[in-house]
Length: 170
Image 1: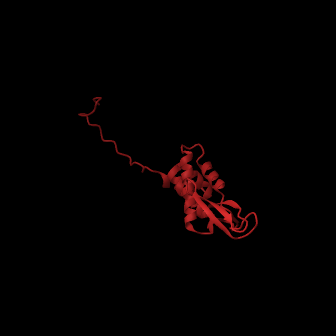
Image 2: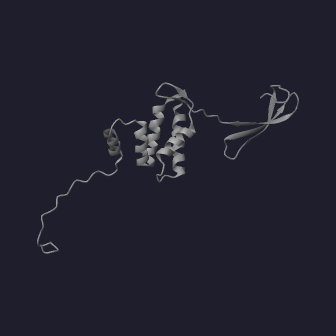
Image 3: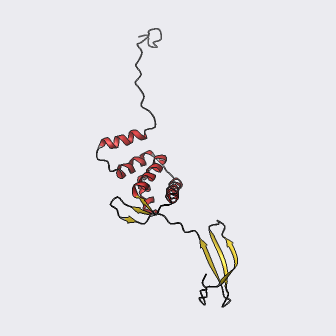
């Protein structure tokens, strides 16, 4: 580490401490040449992959944009901010775990849809309708059928009336 006072590259670490969370290391250093002391901070620098859009353009990952699109789909839905933040964290963790420098926007859209499907079915359908750009009502209906949790009940035929068990004597 170069001394900020004299510019000499020879410095010694005299003390090292981590913060409470363990994500920042504070180091006290001493310059060998001018004997001045200074502090440096070391933290993890995780780089999110760049996003490759459908038209081929590349852009930096934008947490605020991702959060905004999820919150728009979840607008007026009974989902807590904590649940949304946890879903966003899972998406970002998956993107980092890929270890790629570039990720297609379609991959992020699929990750968002997977998280929305777990959080709220209506929000999932809202997002899917925009993301998949439905051409007709049939595509929309197909997604609704996909998320329906209870199977449709078959109609039960009504038994013929039994005078013995008929409460009204009919």
